[in-house]
Image (tube, rainbow, N blue to C red; front, side):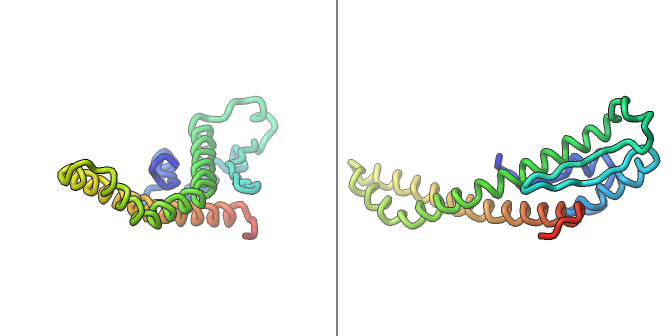
Length: 166
């Protein structure tokens, strides 16, 4: 993922369902359904790790008309949320493996810094850089775990909305 957890903030803003800061987007889907029920049947479909907003006209005369911009935006936002959650889950395990490898090799890297440094001053600078990098690796580990948790919550909620058992 590109440095952030899957989120639905744009969907919440465009449909004015910003009453909560949680990852709960069921309220947004409900609001979209309620506002569009006279014209469109709104549902969330889930297939494997993909979920999407399905919009079907209630009356045949609406079949040929393009979707209203706010519904098209909602579909795009849900697709983006699905893509973000899928990327977060699929990249999570390899990222955690890489992080674990780096943290386990910290002692060996420190030894290599000592051996590679030409001067005591250079060793100090390289050691400080290594310490800073290890600190960032630990931060990445925590963020990654948090993002994976949010992605799992998004999938669970999407499954509930779509009526899929997980």
